[in-house]
Length: 96
Ligand SMILES: [Zn+2]
Image 1 (spheres, helix red, strand yellow):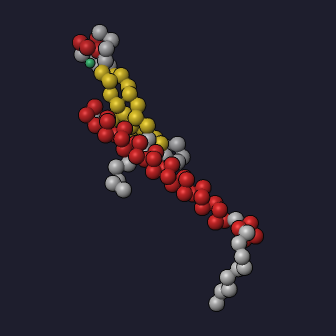
Image 2 (cartoon, helix red, strand yellow):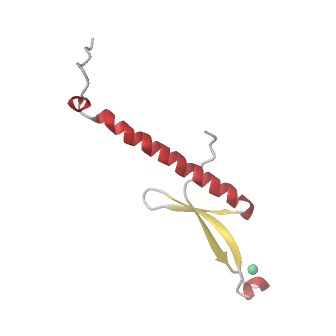
Image 3 (cartoon, helix red, strand yellow):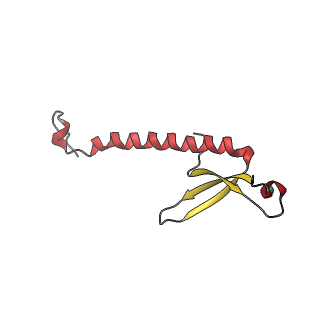
């Protein structure tokens, strides 16, 4: 576990500024934004420099993989919640 985790979505946007010749031609500049939503509908946005996009994608991917692993464990653990009769094993243990 390395801690290289990020939750959210990486979006690509085009921004245009007045006074920039490139933008005047309609090209604009591509920027990357990490959007993170929280319970209650709050959303935070972080701009991501181009050099870090690959890294951010990797960290987002790590998060998804870890989340899937946690979900799989939780699904297995549902078996532990079954009533004793459903487990179909021998006699119950005595407690002190
Ligand atoms: Zn521009």
